[in-house]
Image (cartoon, rainbow, N blue to C red):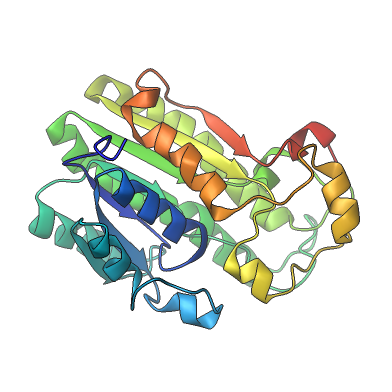
Length: 268
């Protein structure tokens, strides 16, 4: 299994902590060289996430893989284009792109009929536009290689409407990620490029732990809605990305896999 991605180069956005970090380390353990991207490469310190080395890049290197870190804002196309130039200059290829950067990061209920324009644009940029920019930047070198693998990170929020109706801006952005994944998979398939998506549910990332897992539901009520009766972990997401980023899923493209312990089965 350590050679599953041997010789591959992966870029994981938003990977200085949390789900992105877990994915980056998983890919490194499978043999890939990994580029760590974040708007702040020391983001783990903010949420008290313990690393096994000074930085995530060092963690990857300690696994015997090459790694560089690139601070870039994926919401800005110029940043994205410069980031991919650095990747190509350093490694000469890009085999795997995981678009993990995103999140809610805005207070408030965000109901569909009333969320502010500023919040809407921020959420759309962070969760949908940033993903599109990175996919577009990766498409050119992947087409030249006639191979490549893109995994977008959506959310279970993009697949359902909750009873209390809040979080509409985030949910719509993440739904857009899912549908964009399908369009891109159809377009890039003839070039030997696969595009898939995961939709995490309630994941106990360092941010949620640090924030005390704010929710309209109590933890007991939430766990009752999850058939597997536990929160997910960043590693749960990383394992599914392993499947999608490797030849284990060679004939799979345009799909969205929920990683939520069965929460979607509950409906609302």
